[in-house]
Image (cartoon, rainbow, N blue to C red):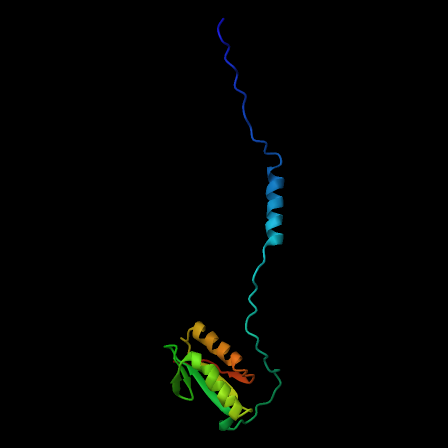
Length: 135
C-alpha cells in the first residue's frame, strides 16, 4: 500500500484585523507620548505708543556681541559666564540700570541666548535689545 501524499494547506496570516491593531497602537503611542514644547524667550515688549525718554549714561550698561562671539561689556572683553556676576554687582550699585544688548549681523544665536540666560540669572529686568549693527 503506497503512502498518500498529504495535501499541503495554504497557510495564511489573517489580515482582517491588522488595520485595527495598527490604528490602536497609533492611538496608544499618541496618548502616551509627551512632546516638549519650546517656551521661547520670555520678554515683555513695551506698548507701541510709549514715548522715548532720555536716560543718563550712568544708568546704561552697554553689551556688544561681535562676529567672533566675544562679549564686550562697556568695551571690555569678558567671558559669557562672568556676565551674571558682573551684572548682578552693577545692579546692586545702581538699581535703575538698563542693560543695552547689541549684536552684529554675524553673531551666533548660541552666544546671544547664553548672554540672555546670564542676564536672566542676574535678575536683570530692564533689558534693551538694540538692532544689529551693519557691517
